[in-house]
Structures are given as structure tokens and as C-alpha cells.
Image 1 (tube, rainbow, N blue to C red):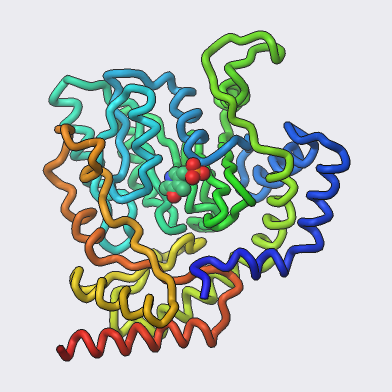
Image 2 (image 1 turned 90 degrees about the vertical axis):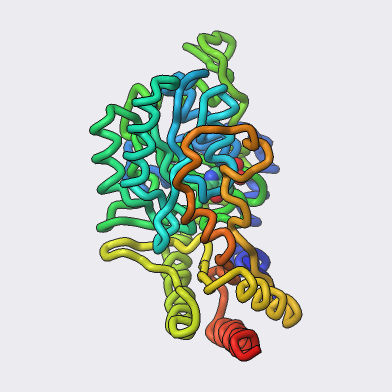
Length: 380
Ligand SMILES: *Cc1c(COP(=O)(O)O)cnc(C)c1O
């Protein structure tokens, strides 16, 4: 069994993907070919933002977003501790300081009250300039943007939405990647919408930001390619990746997102009585980048994980170490007082196989094994 079955997806979309790849090869327009423009139009249309700009990966997308705000040493950017490393890494790359914020126990996403508390602390300490917040749509669920936007506004900060896992999710029919002043996503193969290598994109409604993104993406270009007006990156999406993404986005819109919901619903119905299953607040839709359950303790989680492994059922722990516990931040001393939920979750979470081509038989089989393992563990 596959954790994310990209082979099955390829078989389903092979005709269109192969046709598009062949087209790129025959035209040899490998950099900034027409498929890139087409994809950017489709992405903006789907998400509902004025602009979408593709780039080389989701980490670059975040870095470019921060560069648009001229983030530099002595700046503080607030990020969740329970997320993938990139969210904080990009802050550190620019010499600024990531301030870690704890998450909500039910949604896994940034806790808006703890965000405000962390901002107040940085303001009072007067060592760093609070500049902005990167909220993450973890496991496919949009963050608590109602409350986060209030806090961000109150303190005059910018909001970047890290929608690397969020693409396809929504709040009241407003799509993920449209909530931040700038939003970013990733097309890493395992994300809800993935390509066949690395890829990413930025989204915004702001024309000035759009122009900056276009410049930073290609070496800080000005009026033309050999006019460089700022220090930027080389961060374009390959035409080949755009060629793969176009038919994948079509399938995502037409049925894959819906199928992901169905798989999650089956899981939750079967597992609800045994473990904590994902909580999706009213009016929210998750694209289920991961389907993640919570066990009572670490021993129980590890027991079930080993049991499933022996049954050839792959699982993953996202994330075994909150960011404030990463080795690289070992000498770090900002806001380390209140990150207990991130630490609690890192010891209890387990993500199960999740993709739109998972059938009921497979889900039932996985759930039966989980229940059996739990019964064994809890009776020992
Ligand atoms: C995957 C991921 C990224 C980085 O995306 P890449 O395309 O791998 O660079 C950033 N943030 C989060 C939350 C992610 O899950």
C-alpha cells in the first residue's frame, strides 16, 4: 500500500499528462513556456485572487513573500511551532527572528490568543521589531483567519498565508491561498496539488506586491531581463511542471478534492470512537493534505504505528519535533514559555494513508487494523 498513491493518479490522468509533456519536448520551451502562463491564470481563477505567480518551490514562495516586505535582521516574524521547517527557515535565512507560537489542540493551527500574547511580549521586550505573521493551513485546514486577521490588524503587521498544505481548503467558500496579504503554496508531489518535482506559487490581490514578486522571482529584474534593480532569486517553475499541473488541477477541481473529503469521512466514522479524529470547524473545508489522528499517549501511538508497519500500512508522524525543539534553534531564547500543545501533539499524532484514489475496502482494512492494535495495547 502507498501512503500517497501517485502511480494510481498518473494512470488516471496519463493521456493528458503525456500529451502535455510531449508538447513541451517538441517545442523546447522549457523555461517560462505558455503552460506556465496558462497555469497561473487557472490558479488565480480557482483561488479567487487577482494574481498568481508560480515559482520553483514552496519554500522560495515564502522567502519571496518575506522579501516583498523587506524583512531583515532585528525583525520578528510570528510562525507556528507545529509546522514544516520551511515556515521558520525562511525567516532565519533573511537574518530575522522567527517567534514561535503554539497551536490549537483540535485544529493543529496557530492559536490566535497565544499569537497576541507573543506579539505583546516582543513589543514589551523592545529587542525586535514585530513585522508580520506567517499562518499555516496545516494538514489542509485553513487557519483561524477571522481571529488572526483581527490580531494582525491591531498590531499593524502583515499576514502571509503558508498554504503549502492548504490548497483546495476553504472558509465559507472563500478558498485557501486567498487569506493572506500574500499567500503561498507548494506543488511538492505529496501536497494536495503536486507536480513531478519541485514547484510553488504566490497569490495576492495587491498590484504592488505582484510586481515585486515578479521581480524577486527572476534575479530582482527591473524593466527587462538584464536590468537588475534588487537582489532576487532564480525561482521559476519549469514549463514541464506546469504541463503536469494543468491536467492535475482540472482533476483536482472536478473530483479529487471531493474524493479526499469522502476518504476522510470514512476514516472519521470508523475511528471516531477509538482516537481523536480531525476537527473541521463550521463552514471550513479541509483539503486533507494529511489525515491525522491523535492517540492518548506516545506509547499507544508508537504501538499502533509499528503494528500497521508490519501489516504493510504506511503511516507518518507529522511532526515528531516542534520547530522550537530543532537542533538549529538550540540556543534560541524567544517565547519558549508557552508551546506545550505543540509538544503534546508531536508525541501523539499519526498521519494515515490519504489520497483521492483510496477505496472503501482499503480504508476499512486500515481502520480495522488500527482498532485491533488499540485493543491489544489497551488490554495489555
Ligand atoms: C511543504 C511545505 C513547505 C515547503 O514547500 P516546498 O515546496 O517543499 O519547498 C512550506 N510550508 C509547509 C507548511 C509545507 O508543508
